[in-house]
Image (cartoon, rainbow, N blue to C red; front, side, top):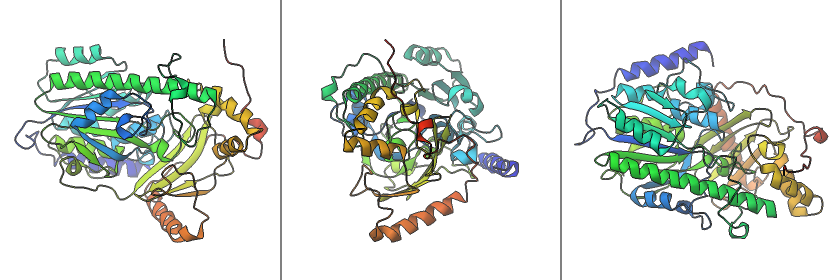
Length: 464
């Protein structure tokens, strides 16, 4: 993005802040206290709230009974830094500067946290809210990189300010590394259709579920504390930054990577229930600002869905756009997508490159290679395993899925003549959106499909 364009965004944002009302009452009550709890790498499907029968998430289910559950909530990008920066700026990754993982917004790009502070809020971040040390760029009044309940309780109890409070709290669970000791039996877990059923895959799935249950416990602790502390007027949100570190999840634009849990509770204001309104992480901060008495700034990509929360609107977005750029030297596979309620179109910018991630390449504090080497071994003699491994490494230039008949995105319809009109429409929709993004080129070194011996997974011996 040019410096002139960045300056224009800044001017629009600052100019719109001057139009904000004084921190006034919302309705008849005071501004709500706001608590946002974020988990890390939690796919939507993996909780009882969204239909899972084999993973224990009692706290999420308790909270869901008191709030509004979004069935169609999406992030901007399926890796940590781009997703979180998009949330905190309400700008898509190319527009805020954090396109690749482990990068941050540009200094001149405004933060939506500033908007909350201008409404009179004191805003604090605990744990993984932004990515790495990037939280300092977003204007929080207080930052603690570590998170536990005692730290949050101490901060709330000892602060002298009488300002309304907004807390962002991020746990590292269920991000890898997962606990070595699982509370789930391997034969009790179910596997999504795109996972190969092997012994180590089931063991790893149980370890991931153990971490999901850990995150659920932490969520329940914070929710109970927040209700005791701010019982009169509390707006509470729970979500996750993207899907879990499994094949076809994190680093992918399939729903397994971009569709996340979202539950919002505001007793007396939000009626409990479920909604299929499509919302995105770039919409979270504008929603909080409007709930706090402000208005959505101009020049951003996000839009408030407060009307959905309050039952005044049933729909929000007609289309969801997502991007993946790269993540270090292992997850290099730039792709773009547009999703409607019925269709998903994915454009893989370099189908001649191999799709690889930390799972098969190692690294990222993950043990995915432990089960992936079982996949590689099975692929030598088993046709299903061979097809799945090939699907993991090789992606076509275009993918089109009918989500109504194929919610798992297993049947690519891009070459189906019956869907040719849909394909062309989705292409044009994505093209038009991309003209607004001014994306930067991917500079990482790819892994060419033509030279598999240079990057293909090689079995290794586990550490004792």
